Length: 189
Image (cartoon, rainbow, N blue to C red; front, side, top):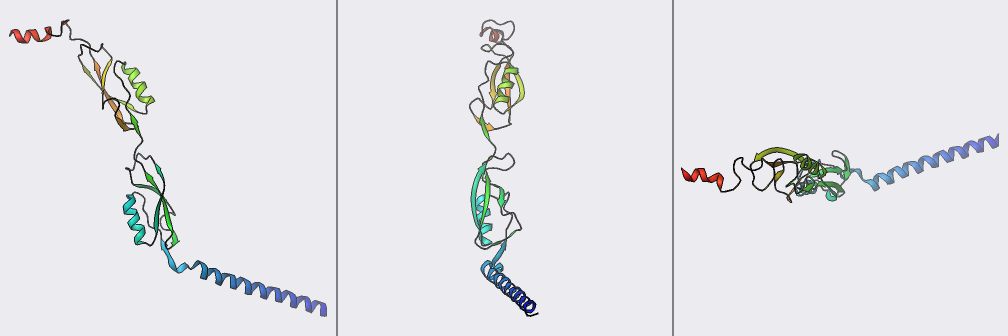
C-alpha cells in the first residue's frame, strides 16, 4: 500500500510540476511576444512605392523592396504584391516586403523594310510584337508588296505585345517610268 501511495504522490508531483512549468512558459511567452504592440498590415498593392512607404510609416511599419518584375497591368513603380498580406496582425516596426512593377517588358521593333507582309509578321511575332494595320503607298524605290517602313519606326523600344503598323509598297505609279513624268502633266496645264 505504501508503494502505491508513494507512486500516486510522485505522479501528482509530476503533474503539479508540469502545470507550473506550462503556466510559467505561457506567461514568459506573453511577456516576450507582447501582443499589445501589434499593427494591422495595410494594403499597399497598387500604390506607388513612396506612397506605400508613407502608409507603412503611419502604421509603425517599414517597407522594403525585395524584387522588381515586369507587369503589363501596373505602371512602373507601383506595388504588385506584399508580404505579410493585408489585414494580418504584425508587430510594430516590422518590415513589409514588396514586389515592385518595372512596367511592361520593352522590346525593340525589328527592321522590316523590303520584307513581304508575311515575313514582317513572322519577324514581329518572334520579337513578341503583333502586326497592326497595313497601309499602302506608291514607291519608286521599294518593289510592289514589300514593306516600306513601320510605325513606330524600327529600333524604337515598345511594350511587348504592341501592334506595329506597316506601310506596304504598291510599286511605281503606272504609266510613269521617269519620276519627273508623273508631275509633267500638272506642269503643262
